[in-house]
Length: 306
Image (cartoon, rainbow, N blue to C red):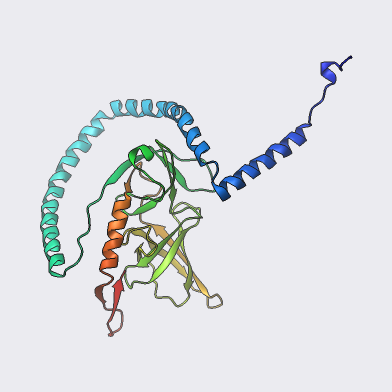
């Protein structure tokens, strides 16, 4: 039986193949998002790709090494400045130790629960995924270092984001400026609670669904309220930068600026779950540390910080 020559054989057209693979991709994404079936495959791929990621970071490491060699003079100047700053900070640290001892004694007198010390992990940003629609970064610490999804990431100023995905040696952090990320917050000045959400733009947050007549001013500081059980209370998040009140709308348009260096630093600090649990337990056992606030008028009112 004769067969057709090779050059007469035809398979599916290019358009048919494109449609097939697009539908297959959409199906896999839907199944993974709904049932999380591909998490193990993703973990295995992360292990396989990790050496390639390390290899891709070699030029950066070489550049940093060469830059360090040529920056020795600048390092010497910075070292002298840091020594001077160390002496200043050491004196302040001694005062802080005295204040901590006094605070511990006051807590004992007030029968307040002691907050437990906890472990934190220092991590470094490896790279930023080039996705214009998401605000995420990758850290060099993963499950091998005890990092788990849900842990909070901060810098020296405030909240940076939250661990949303991890592998044995890497972790993905969703920044608070991501459009799908929200943080329960509280206004320091009057205790007003709300939720600040990301806008997908660097350096911009929004307070949504806040009444037009809400007691809010430009410059107000927002800290985590701790009512969600995820973020520990009292961590600085943002400051109110602008408020637009239109009587024709039910809600005010409030724009905020993150206090943390969301796009500035390379080293970040990951808070352990023990810290979150200890802070949450302390708040539950001491449901209100009554703070007296004097507003603009003569009348004084009291509220509880939760």
